Image 1: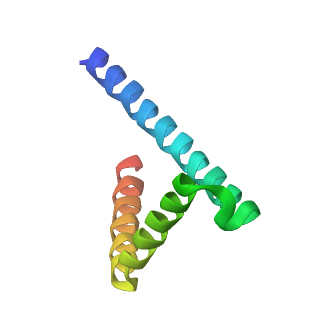
Image 2: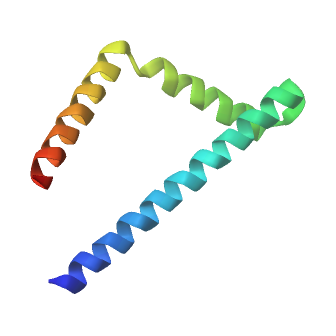
Length: 82
């Protein structure tokens, strides 16, 4: 059972690392767009367009729901420690 827990921990760490790298990549693409504008190329423009689409999809109700889920998770995790 310890091997499985350890393997799942490594897998979770790998997913977190991948998410961090993708977030850094998107940040670099946004920076390139800010610096070069429309001359930055079609790939950068497509990434920015998709990013704006995702931002427009996320409504205030969705943000509130995500906040409540994160808050409930934090409370449950805090209670498990005691």
